[in-house]
Length: 513
Ligand SMILES: [Zn+2]
Image (tube, rainbow, N blue to C red; front, side, top):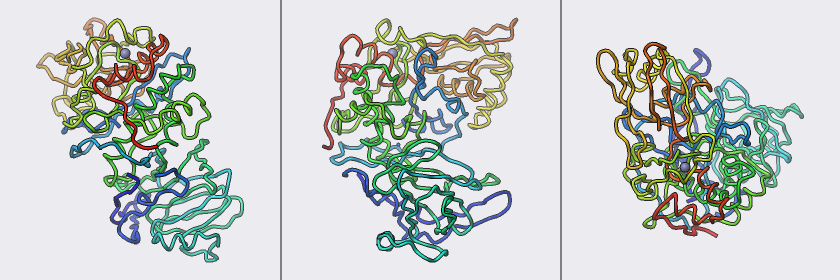
């Protein structure tokens, strides 16, 4: 699992700025070496979700849950305003069978940031940093990293430097400047790999990131007139990655058993995503709600202990790892992965199917502040948001929709959760998946009108010109319900009991030691 297949067979051309067309060429060895190399300091050794309806793309991505935004509680990550961006249409992704249980610890590639290629990237580390160009052969890089700093200011293979560093993409690859020492080096395209010497983390954006950092010019950015972007991707052993996930996904004062259940679920999810994307793109997951929140290095002892005490444990069903989706609060009515997060038929399994979960109403997350909620949106805004979403997703019926006269629930799943909505206007009716409606409404990032879930009822008032939306829960509702899990742990349930409830039919299996 630690072997990475080549992704970038060659460097891609991209436009930097409005008119300058630059071509990155010369990635040595056509294979992408960076993902196949096990970072020296890692141990041994794709979210949720699939792109959904194809076409048009269903939702943003699968998603991890927005957690409770109640300010009285500690703020889990997911309450970021970024969560509300209208998702870009997705390309169809061929379904892939779920992975078998890995026997060694996978290394996951997590995208921690992305920025315009014209802006420089600032990095530092408590120790020195070692920079290696992936354009050189691994043997060459190894030879040149033995300590000697190349004297030439031309293209170099490797550089050990104290930093902090200012890194800039240019037409020849990368220009790296030591902000303290004043010296600089140039690296060839495509990827620049940076790691802290002595297993120290790299500091970027005021956060410490364990693992090895890769700077990659996103091969899919820069099309048309868009400025290309630099992706910052961290390759990290899954056990080293997880504590910063759990710390950010749960409130710090929640029970250890909730943390342990969450650790096993998040590990399973990460294993599936790593297997799904390896060799298909230069990252497996995003550090954010689209995949799993990630705080980078954490000092949260409960999170560290939860990961340590469940090391190597994943959820399995029929010998394969369960895509263990989870969300903040199911509202008492869970969703199935299929139709909510993915169309991948391999995810049509009991552990992530609402039909097998049974009724949770009255005994799950009803104590959470997000168990029920209400927002009001002007009908003109509802129309504008549906039109914008329709244009982006090639839904002409929505792109030209008129002002709604009524919005009703179409299909419901086995648990009673809204699956589809019917939007009626003076001249017809249009269907839209409940989760898509949610993301369409949330595009403007207006917290006052944010729909926390797709499980809603809508009351249209023509006289007031508004849609009053009543909803349940927070997040997509598939798999583990974080608030429900905490309620169980508070009454004494173990992590195993929690997982048995939220992933029926799955068992905990140890993959690696
Ligand atoms: Zn729940």
